[in-house]
Structure formats: C-alpha cells, structure tokens
Amino acid sequence: MIKSIHFQNFKALRDATLPLGPFTLILGPNGSGKSTAMQALRFASEPQAYGFDEIATAGFARESEPGVKVSIEWSWDGGEVTTVSERLFNRVLGPVPQDNGSFPDSLKKALAGFRVFSFDAEALAAPVQAQRLELGPNGSELAAVLSVLSGSEPERFQSLNKELQRWLPEFDRIVFDFPGRGMTEFFLRTRVGNYKYRASDLSHGTLFALAFLTLAYLPSPPAIVCFEDHDRGIHPRLLNEVRDGMYRLAFPENYGEKRAPVQVIATTHSPYLLDLYKDHPEEIVIAHKDDEGVHFERLSEKPNISEVLEGAPLGDVWYSGILGGVPSSP
Image (cartoon, rainbow, N blue to C red; front, side, top):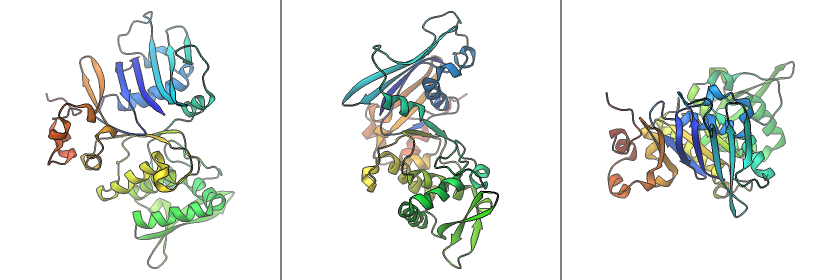
C-alpha cells in the first residue's frame, strides 16, 4: 500500500505531500491538484514518457536541481520502502528505491498497474470486439468484460447480478447479444416483464453505476485505482451503493473476497457523498490551494474536528468553508 506521495515541482504541486490509506477520498476546489496528483502517479511509473516542460511547475528554471520529483512511501512486507522518480531538464531517473536498494517486483507491478477511471457513457455502452477482463480508463470494453466474467466466473457473475438487483431494483440481470463479426453487446433485463434495454438506451447514471459494480466484482482488479469525480451522473440515493462498491475493492475481506485488497483513491465535489464518510474522517483528504501552491491535509488531523462536526452533516460543514478545500472568495 502507498502510505504517502511527496510531489516536488510537479505542475501546481510545488512541495506537497498526499497522505493515503486503503481508501482515500480527496476533495477540493477546481485547480487544487486532485487530478494533477493522479497524473503524477502515472509519471512515477513512467517518468521517461513525460517531457520536462509539460510537467514542471510554471516558472521553474530548467537548469534547477533537483527538477521534477515524485517520491512514494510504501508499506511493504512489514516495513517501508520509498521509491523516487525524477525528471531533470536533460535526463530521467527512476523509478528507483531512495536508498539505492532493490526495487521489489510487487511494487513495480502495483505502480505499473495503476489505473485512473473517468467513465464516459458512450464508451461504456459501445458494442466491442475484444474479449478481455480489463476496463479501459473511460469504461470502454465493459460489454467484453461482463461477457468474459459470465463465462469464466459464473458464480461471481451471478453475485454481480444479485447486487445489481439491490442497486437498480427495476432490473434483474445482465444479458448479452452477439451481433456478428465477434462483436458483443449487453442489455439490462427488467424485473417486471423481462424487457431488454440496450446499453445505449440506458441512462448515464445507470451505466456509471454498472461500471463501478463490475470493477467491484472482478476477480483480479488493478492494485491501485483512482476514480475522478466518481459521483458525476449518479443520483444521490445511489451514492451509498457506489461507496459500498469502492469499499468492496479496498476491504475485500469484509465482503467474503479472498483476493488482495485494492488501494482506492477517489475525488469529489459532492457534499452528498461526503456525508457518507462523517464517521471516517481518516479517509478524507482536503486539498487547499494558496499562493504557495497546493497542500493536502487529512480531515482527522484538523484541530478539534470532533467538535466541528458534531450535530451537522459533514457535507454542509465543508460547503460552508470552515474546513477549507473550497473556491476562494473574490
């Protein structure tokens, strides 16, 4: 698991540390570094894929040392390991262990397998030809993933359908059609009447919910995943189920799963979603932005946070500006 990430001169993240846990919800105003932090994780995996000028903090001198740097502190094998990825103007370093020791293969695999999801309804609904068990960053290949899951993991697929009935009670299961040339598409069948709704005829919120549900039931999901503004298009009454889906990824033992846990990072602007985490302030990180750049702070580490939250919905308290992480007033 990643314990924290330190960013140095990476776009708006001039000198910032992002604390992380098994599940972390990041909130803050637009431009507060939430998406930038996710891009920095990609950079940490492949620093050679980024040019110096496209990632360096604005106004940062090309010849300056130590350049753009992302350091990840891992909890691994009962101890701690820090890996560093660095981009100088004329060369690339990393990812390598900070102490110049060996880079464990499991950490390499986790970092390389990091995925950022920002679902797109059109991509989710599209018929596909590939037969794979991995969603694209925008949710593409959903039909193929569900089809493969139904054949290779029938019991898991049946459990997914059962949970689908709880999330979206008007439907009872996912069904498929194969329109030719190796193509696969999916439908949702209604509980009453057994009518089939083509994926392209489903609402955006229904498609987004199904994508979350599918990821939660994969037998081998990525080791680290991020969901950007994952409440987008989701009705507030469904947010509790979406939270459960992300918890299923992060805490599989609580749901009877035997696979390895997934570290989940999510970003939001939704006070409705935030209300669901009032009892878990350690899972919330607030992004602040000022003249010195971006800073991250765990909600649980704010002074007198118990008194601040007492008797009020967390979303209302955050929206008021008391906790920070809101747009600056003119």
